[in-house]
Image 1 (spheres, chains in turn cyan, orange):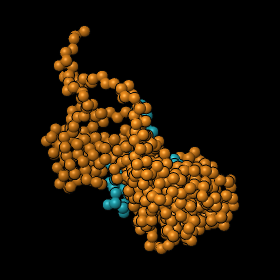
Image 2: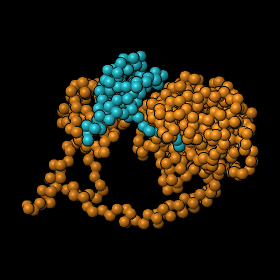
Image 3: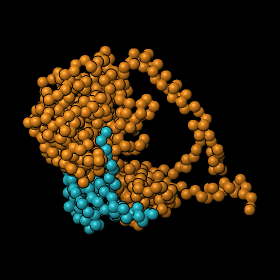
Image 4: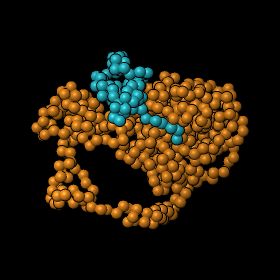
Length: 78
Length: 445
């Protein structure tokens, strides 16, 4: 059951620290090396969106310059 | 079977409890770095985020040395005091740690020290809830009458909803019909379910559309987006019915960030916001949200994004949320409207009363900034027709339209300056700021 949860592919929102603003290339390369897919960077926001297994969350957090990693929320019209 | 004494039962219960540790609170922004240091030093760290999708969170986080609550910037360290001191020393030296205190154990009130839980009657069994509700509503109504505000509205200025059939009650009460401003030259982004640009009311307008939602058509099959664009930027003279649009001269940037099913993810919404800023939109209207619980903090991602938008001269206006069931239950403002850098809009009805569904500023620091018409709002619908909808979604584009009018007045009104001007222009309401913020949004005259 726990293995299934960790293997699940999730959408991630990765926030880069302001101190690492000039290092988004390196962070994206590290994400790619971890096997994450659909990597999209939003430089002006210091945000990167990517997709990957939940089991990689800690590894993503450990990348230097990564401030936070969240699974995507679901939004709806109000 | 051996008979268990009261004392042995208490001892067994205590032994089953996880040992207490120390609660470490980090300075804002320093938690991530501190946690990474712990991990580099071989400390086993488990994050609350790791269990977000799990059915249950194990109390000991699977035996980790440190339990990290990312959202709060707090960690619980399960070690002896001297080990905790050694672990934290470098982080304290680098001013990353704000506070350390022993972990406390909480219990239900009235629980005896031996840990045995007494049998408590559930509130439903001991208290007549219907009686309490009736009592509360009666007190509220009495207070309203004594204060002379049974209409909930603005002092001495109650509008009759059916006063002028040539404009909707929303456009009239925000005074958009009394200004010569149109939002000309101002780019307004509406991030929603798309937009029917073939609607006859928008013929000849400058319209830019972009699809961000995955597995969706480029059209507005839902209808919500067209309705919101209509309110923010609809025409001065529609092909049929009353005027419903505020900034009829504004340029329309319709980003489809919510799919045909009406739902969207961070990826599509952030991409839409990035596009709107890149296109130079002075206003970004987001009639969307995700529910937030009581005590939950704003999402740091959207706070950072909202600030970046403001710094770039784009004001983000977002719907407060529709989860309330007034008068009995008021739900906290949803995400991303609960971020301090994003303007949160509540909804009121034609008597200026908070709409029964409109969320309130229950969580500390997460306020409704202002209110606008959000009940029985007439606007455009896909296919060339019209629809009437209610929601904080409908209030939000009223404010977005007003923001475009203000932005047209003077180029200095961008970002934070535009935010401040919006709040300067509001009409105070009698309802609490928790529900309507500074008051009712008004167009510049």
